[in-house]
Image 1: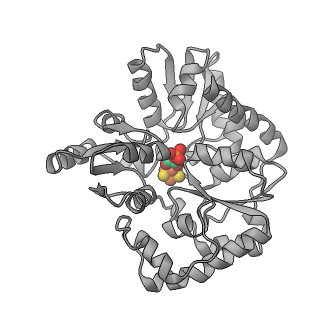
Image 2 (image 1 turned 90 degrees about the vertical axis):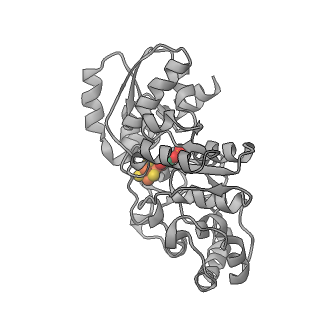
Length: 343
Ligand code: 13P
Ligand code: SF4
């Protein structure tokens, strides 16, 4: 558990004042903390009373992660916690597809989504009908979907993956024909990784992209390397293949954090969303981040006020609903991921 029982504005400010990345969104003043502290304390009291937990993705704002989040992590870690939790209500501070994953794994629990913009450019790139059409065009292929997909899309696919296990899962699937969706960049990075591992599979992919990670270019990497010759470049597999190829490390949110923790270097270029950069700045004060980061408008539509609102008096629109028939098939797809991760 991350959160303290009661926090003063001064303590909140002390804990967040060193965060510089992410512009005004992630920059904290005492005044801002005076506004946040009472909301944080009210949320933490209510959460206990209602037997609720708050799962916070690394990309949401620091006051959520460090103020009220019970768990913070990448989509894989959070989906495992959603699977294991004893709490009766899950407040998922992230985006809709993550809330849906929690609901699929816990159909009897209430899953509340405080995000006002719950979308994601990847999850919105393809729907269930399009998957059905693709399955007709690619018979004999195992359909692998990224966790950044709707519940309906997962229900039409065979195996789900996250950015932390995509290569391991695809390597373990006993079929050489793979259709990967929806991220084109991750599909191309997957092909390169299979080649590096000497695994020969026919991998087709869809053409979605993440609005945040697709923005990073090779030029930026070269510019930063010239300016900071000792920098370690760390990227997410949703980045362009040429960017990943010229990175020192490629991995999920949690893997990027571990890389930074385990690497002696002091300077890092993190090609990812600002929320993770803010976490790194706070948790590793002896390391320096160079370059800029990008904000995901969907993740950043989560606010403390909305978390309090959905805990206090949830409206029908705040509950994540997934049709029971969709849950049944989508669950098989997610369970296949857990199976192939252990294989
Ligand atoms: P992670 O799987 O690393 O949490 O990534 C999810 C995501 O939305 C990345 O943009
Ligand atoms: Fe979707 Fe990209 Fe935002 Fe992640 S960062 S939620 S992939 S739009």
